[in-house]
Structures are given as C-alpha cells and as structure tokens.
Length: 415
Image (cartoon, rainbow, N blue to C red; front, side, top):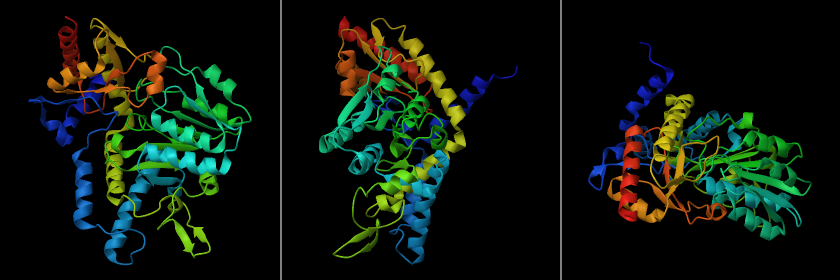
C-alpha cells in the first residue's frame, strides 16, 4: 500500500522530538508534555551546539577589530543576518535589523517612525486581538504626538471585521500595525488584504510576526509588508534576539532609535552623523551569540521545510480541537476559519489557573491567564483562558494526555 502524503509527514516528525534535549526529561515525575511554545519554544541541539561553538572558538567583538578572531566573529554574526534575509526573502541584508525581539522591533518603529511622521490629529490603526507589545508602544506614540489610536473590531469567532477596517482608513491614518497570527486565539489574519487596502491610500503596515514565523512560510516581498518583526525564541532560537525587517525607503527616512557605538559615522561634540543601514539601528555591542543561534534555528527549520511543518501542525490542531470538543463543559475561545496551532479554552465553572495547576501535576505544561491580551479577554468577557500551543515536536500522544488531564481537572474542580 502506498503511504498517503499525510502519513509521510507524520513519519517525518516522529523522530524530531529527539532533537530537543529538554523534552527528554520528566516534569513532576512524568514525561513532559510541553504545550507552551507560543510563549517560548524549546531549542534543538543544533542551536545549542552553534552557540556553544561560537563561545568556545570564535568569540570577540564584531566589526571594528582587525585581528582574525574579531573577523571570525563578524563573519558569524553577519552570516546569521544573511540566513534570516534568505529565510524571509528580504531584498537586502541592510533591511534586516537585529533587535532583542518583537517587542523591541515594534517599539523601534513606534518611536522612530512616529517621531518623523506622526503629528497631532493623525491616526494609527491596530486590532482588538493585539498583544500588549503592539498596543502600548502605539499608545505612547499617540500620547506624545497628540494622535489617536483606532481599533479594528473582531467577531465572536475571533476574526477581524474587515468592513470596519476599510472604513477606518483615511487621510489621517499614518500606520496600520496588526498581528499576523494571534497568540491568544490562533487566528491567521488576512494580512495580504490588510496591506493591499492600506497601500491603496499610501499607508505603511507593520506586521507582528512573532506567532507566524515558527509555523508558516513568510515572504516579506510577496506580502509587501513595510515592516515585519519577530522573535528568535519563538522559532526555536535563543532568547534576547529578534528581527525587524523594514523597507529601505522607510528605514532611511527614520531617525535612529538609540545612540551609541556602532551606529555612528562620525562624532564631534558639535554634531554626529549616523552610519548606514543596518548599523544605524544597532547601537552598542550586539547579541552576537544570539545572531549565531538564530541563524542555526533558521537552518534547522529550513532543513525540515515549511510546507511539512504547516501541514503537520494543522493535523495536530485539528485533532486537538476535535478531542477537546468531546469534553463536557469545555468552551473553545477562538474558532476562526483560519488558525495556527493555538487552542485556547475554558472549563465552565473552573478558573483557568486551577486547571493549569492540576495539569502541571500531571506533567502537562500549558499557559493560563490573559496572555498579554487583556483587551481581547475583555472583548469576550472572560478573565483569561487555558492555552495549549503546539509545535512540530508535539504529537497526538501529547494531545491525548492534555485531554485526559482536562477531564481529570474538570472532575476534581466541579464534582
């Protein structure tokens, strides 16, 4: 019998868990079921090895040293940038800015772009499902400039109401900043349409790609995004490193976000001139090992392949959704037609924290609370959810243990 395509994909991922050392240990005396990848993913041995090798064999500060070790470190650092550029299909390395993560990427744009282009009476559009990191920086920018923050509403399924979005766009709109994939709902937003509608009025768009980049192919040129930002630690790389992609025309026009070493061309006490991209936005000694580890994570994901990752995780999410719907009293929050691998739910009559605590005792790691999306929780009239977030190192056995744990928690808390 010829194996189906889905069977081949499942077989491909059966051994991948072995690449992740932390997943080989127990939690609470039981084999760990890690279902909190939306908060931070685990790291494969290839990434750990790359960082270890860098520190053992080639650590030095980058760009300014003429000695061989510094040149090796510089090559390793810039190789990480080049790998990311290829990964997201950015036109050039100079449009790939290293930041600490998605939060800093958004803050950089909110600060630098808005200092240049935002004035009193202008408007910025975000959505009702944004992470706090894509709300607070824009609130701060609006408060500074005297501008107004507008919010695209969502329906009960957790989908953007696009008719409302189109009506919001006007001559005062200076930026649209939306999440590509919701960290709380798993909703995959229609970002191509969002960008197209904004560009028809000459409005730039920033996409928060933190939850999209681990699960699907992102092509910034195909999307035509003006800015795209994501974090290394959510895509199997190290913490403290991330990427802001920006179109050169915007990055050239924006003032530096921070001042210091590395980002300058000349300095006198009277005046400073700034360096070229990308260094203009990379003040100080960078996270060199983070860039090396991020490059290794890119290579690891590329080796597996985006199509296989997306297909496998879609199968897992469908299985998890179907199995969870069989549990009495469970209500799934976020039922959009297009979702990535996030399953948020509640047990009627039980507090999410209590459920999460019981699951922890069973060796199942989930996230409970508002997931840094308090306005979204207010929209649904709930304090928070239990969130199981999947990655390609999970399997159906993990789902079965989650569902069994939820049944046990419901029995303990509601009986």
